[in-house]
Every structure is written in structure tokens, then in C-alpha cells.
Length: 379
Image 1 (tube, helix red, strand yellow):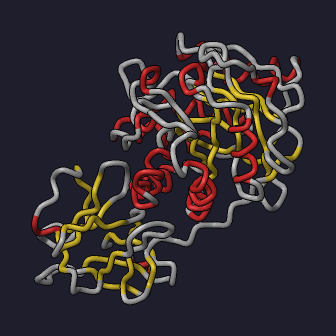
Image 2: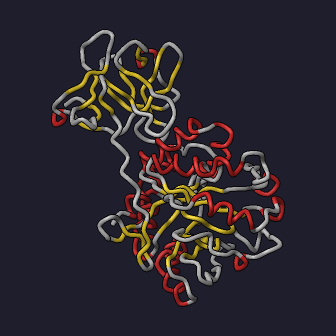
Image 3: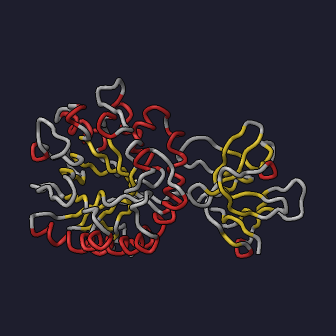
């Protein structure tokens, strides 16, 4: 059975074997192929190169005409397609589809349904869902500097792994975090917030915007919070007040924040590990879990929501835990187990990892754990 990709039109994209030059063709009977994921293209001037199945793996055309996945830095000349062939690349997002004779390879993104019901999120049919998020701390900085095109690789990665929420820092001080310098005082900062949110929504992603990060340095006033609320109103967007507020001191605290506006699902933000921020009227509460051991993290995953609710919390969001992607990270099996535990009582959980928190694509090892973590969270 040849390997290929199913088209939204019901057919399939395959490499025709025993042809020179090797080329993509459309099979109308998608039952005759073995689907292998999504695809995008990297532009190399006269040529385009087909990519990818998972993280930094490429979907490559081999000399014998077969499709295989290989390391991204090992794409050979035989894997190139001439620009004047049937494969075309449409720049930017939303979509970034590979178009074959007018048929879109990537399936259309489902409309986002963001609804809170009690302590949970629910889908359009009213069934409970758990939102799976990942760190994308630098996403607004990247969008502000490079537009939608700067987010394409990360959108593709999230689609491949199953993440539907990005945790984004809306300000930061590189003096404190070593990677992000961003201030609402930059010219044009608020002009692009709405476009940023709508771009992510068009690609099936719900932003979780954290307003006050490193505010001991940035010194944004409370009006920054209400300005963000005004710009995200009516969109599929979540809003968080502070990141670890007691460590990143400000001249006001989370309880000084007013409601950002009707219809917005929001939290006052997070505190240091294993410390609850009293919601005081906010619909959601965040926790940064302990990082001492896997067993303790698993205890946090199951025991923390009941404890948080005993202290006044409603909807519970796990927005940071022990980071994946370094030598202290968990195994693939442990990642699945944590995801399964988060699916029980949390409304949202974020896959904290060393790469995407720094604005990088995940390594293969981290991506494997991310995929297992998302799989564990599925109800």
C-alpha cells in the first residue's frame, strides 16, 4: 500500500512510483493509501521541499518514489519538486495549504467553540472537554516582528501534536527571563493584538494571554489589562493576570485587577509553585505545580483541583509544571500518565517545555512526549 495524505476533497496525495522525475499525483480512492499526517512546504527559490509529519521530521520523496520521514537536516536533492509542477505553496496563515490541482491537502480547521459551563469547558454539543495547551511565550513578539509567517512552523507543530491552546506572554524583561523583551509601550503594540488573536483562531488555536510578566521591570499599569480585554472581546481567547506574581513583584497585586469585560474567561494569574492565587470572583484559577518528582507531580495532577475548590476556585487551569525537554523531564509513558491525570478534574493544562518557551520548535524527544501527553488528555 503506498503512503500518502488524504485530501479534503476525499482523494489522496501520493508519490507515483517508478516515475522520473518522481512527482506527486492525486489518487481519487483514499482507501488505497496509508495516511501519514499533514504536509507543508519550505521554499528554496527555484524548488520547494515537502515537509513534515512530526516536529523536526520531514516527509521526503525517496529515489525509489516512496514517501518516508527523515531528519529535517538530511533532505536530499531528489526530494525537491520543481516550482512549475502541480505542487504550489501559498504563503502565510491561515491555512498554508499545499494545493494539488486545486485540492487542499490540509483538512479545514474546525470552528472554535469556547464555552465555560460550571467548572469545565464544553464543546458545541455540551460535552465536557479538556483544553491541551503548550508554551508559546514569545509568540506575540514573533508575530509583532515578523507577522503571521513567523508563526507558520509553530502552527504546524501544534496541529501535528494536537495542541489547541498557546500560553503567550504579552510582555517580558530579558533581564529576568533571558529570552523575551516586550513592552506595551512599543509603538503599535495594541494595534496588532486583535489580529494576532484572530490569526490563531483561524488556525484552530485559542490564545491564553498572560498580561503581566516581569512587571517589576516592565512596570505596566493596570490599564494594560483592560486594554487587552477591550481588544480580545468577542474572540476565542483566554486572559490571565500575572505570571508568578509574588516573585515578579508589581506595584499592585492580582486582586486589584477588575473584570476584563463581559464574556471573557479569565484568571488572576499564577503564583510560585504549589501556591494558589485566591480567585475572588475570577471564573478560573491557575496553579504552577510542584517540580520535585514525577510521583509528586502525579499527586498534584489529581489532588490539587479539589483542594483549590475548597479554597474558592471554580475552573482550574494547570499552566506550568516540571518542564519537558531537559534532563529532568519525564519519559513518554510518564507524559501520557500526567495527561490522563489532568483529564480528570482540570479544565485546561499546559505542556511546559524548554523549547517552545524559548520560541523554538520542539526536539523530536520533546514532541514525542507532547504527543503522548495530549493523547492522555483525550476523553
